[in-house]
View 1 (cartoon, rainbow, N blue to C red):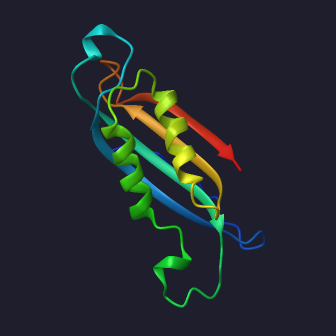
View 2 (view 1 turned 45 degrees about the horizontal axis):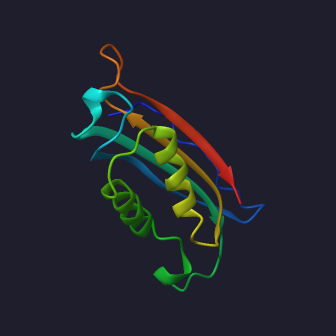
Length: 130
């Protein structure tokens, strides 16, 4: 498990709620090298979203950005097939998050868990703002 510190992006003064997914590990067909084609390798994904914060939610799931929906979108993106760059996957995940108009900022980290023999992981983190 990664020892990554959480990104604090919730902000009451700006009306921002922090929705996140931590350390989602999935098999993916990803990589530019010949030995990476035609097989899956483990990746870890972290997503941090700054979303509009409504005080009166009425305990209604429809009034929040559902992290379960975000996870489903990530799984669908990975199921589309081989991606050469983890940067490409990170951009696609961020774009999928913006399908919900309440998302203002998306920070996405994608890590390949077996990319380097002497490291826990290697990867990329991006931040995009609407």
